Image 1 (cartoon, rainbow, N blue to C red):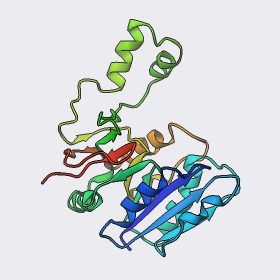
Image 2 (image 1 turned 90 degrees about the vertical axis):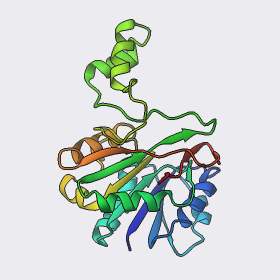
Image 3 (image 1 turned 30 degrees about the vertical axis):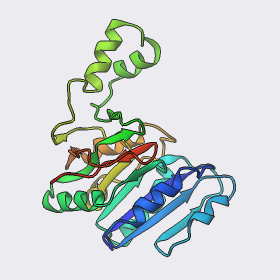
Length: 234
């Protein structure tokens, strides 16, 4: 098996159909893990394919700890790649296959995120620098000041046009494509983070040993749902 994928669930499965449809259309030997943090197991109904493993936690363990359940399986089974993604993500055919091809050819890359779009077609600006205490304080308490605006522009790489492959220290967990060999060096998500910044922390640790990159993707298909990964153009 070459690819494991994990999606963490909590109560609402309204957007899950598109994600599962996209995953099961990937031309690869894969296993999809649905890790359910909901108080009930009503979302078990989505595990209707032999390639889907449903794990019911019975309580909300948080984002990173839940994904770690699937990541442990991937490491134990010596699966080469693992995709961490959100349930509101969908993507067109050939997207993940192109990412695998790129990762196979670039062994120095430990983690990757492609372009991600909102349903409106607006680009999500997910490439960021490591946040400093000043960045976090400014965003939380001083957001209306010019100083905070300058800090935020630098932190969010506002001058980057998303027009080239770039090695960046922070990757969003909405669609984080991981080389499992990198995780053997760095460890998995830090479970002390219940939600938010655990993805940046993991990317930061991977970036010590590997490149963590924004992978250039071009817009070739229509937006299907709230968030879309678009097909690469070669």
